[in-house]
Length: 200
Image 1 (cartoon, helix red, strand yellow):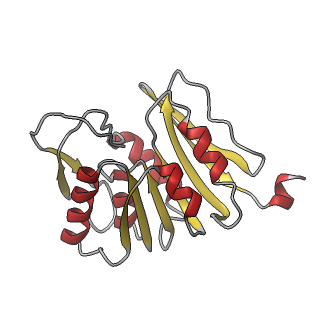
Image 2 (cartoon, rainbow, N blue to C red; image 1 turned 90 degrees about the vertical axis):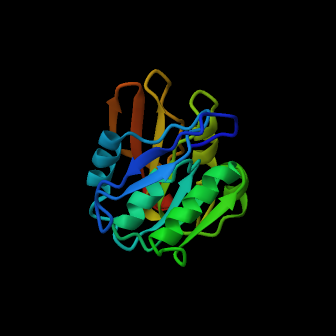
């Protein structure tokens, strides 16, 4: 995730863990509030997602460095929408997409995640949500994702939160599929259900 604000100008690097760009290092400028998903968390997450990533239509909310969406594309996702309020972060993601020659299957959207979801056109197979901690945004994202047609049946939602925060509240359309804690980060993978399945 990324937020606006003045930060150090020294470049940091993001390493793609698996797929066609495995080991590729991509640079990004650190900024206040930028908290890329740690390598070990991404590795665990994409082990969970391995059966469904290839060909998936993805959405990376609060994209920041773009670590999650880029990893998904490396592993065969068919497309990804990157959403963030930081123009600087999105410019860097756009540069990476051009360098990796996948600009035709990925798009960057400079707007708040909740605004994007109000007019988004699905269905998405995998949604990544790594919002600023302790602001209640995860619950708001989960609520908007209940909109008909936004997430595919059996689609997956990944949510990061602070380890000490309560789990985000989700409707009966979602069931917890996997969860884990690594240091100060709790991460959860929810699976979307049809309305009939959710009510049985």
